[in-house]
Image 1 (cartoon, one colour):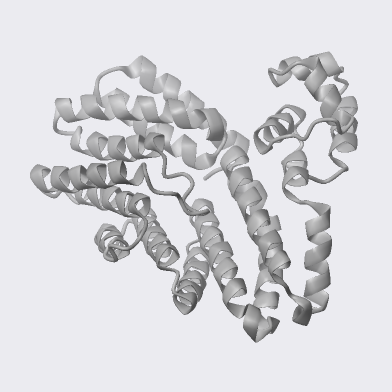
Image 2: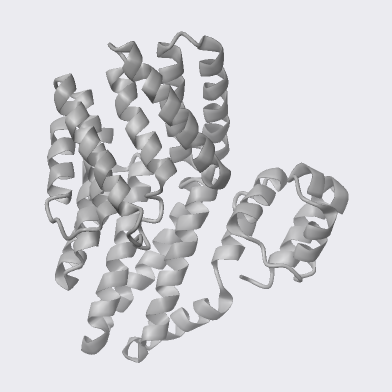
Length: 353
């Protein structure tokens, strides 16, 4: 964490004319926590920092101070100037920084992290170009992870060209080091990108390609099966085919509970899979009330659990919209309006398209 966090928090609080007690009440925490954060006695989490950013209208300033560690920044600056001195510790800094940005995006949405991630990507690409031969595999692997994240941010921002470019690099680099899980992840996100662009057949085909390798992490294969099932439902495939694919996804997701998650697949949780399955049922629910009842059940449980840790992300708002559609299909217009209002608040807060 940047040691400037406490001073910046105090400056922002005072510039807004808030007392410690008033700010604490606004973020639903005790007065003592805000005081400890300002004096550096307590380390803030990304979630707490993002909530403070929201109340203080700080545009993600505090959250970025939590993610950007100055000691790591100094090390990266040094190896950027002296790429032949690149070592495993610097690669670990890059991996840790990426994990921080992933958490930050979960908390505040993709918009505020786009610019700093692009700056870091310039460093990663530069290091990759000049890395010593013995360090290249490690740098290529972490570069592929950064590129995959950049591809996702491109999707979230509606920048199809940037998403395609970074996904292409990620696929190349992951293939170079033989990272099967990351290759499958990139293919699955290319499938999601195809969905966003209305290319449903490509979405289905890429989802199938992503799960073809049976050595790939079970949680990732479950995600790909769920995405394939959603594509089939969107394409109007027969009910039995969609349910068969979804049933396989559920079985593989159950297997995944015992498997460790990759650093870039940390969101493959039971709550996430409940939402993914619920979205499939909501498409089927357009013509089948029992399917829609299942959609409401799964989506309600899933978004409630996910909202505890990522309730500010734009992608979470999209999940809420699926729930609202299912509630509307069930004739529960009041709940649908309330859910859409929650999604709208996220859209406005994150400037999400």
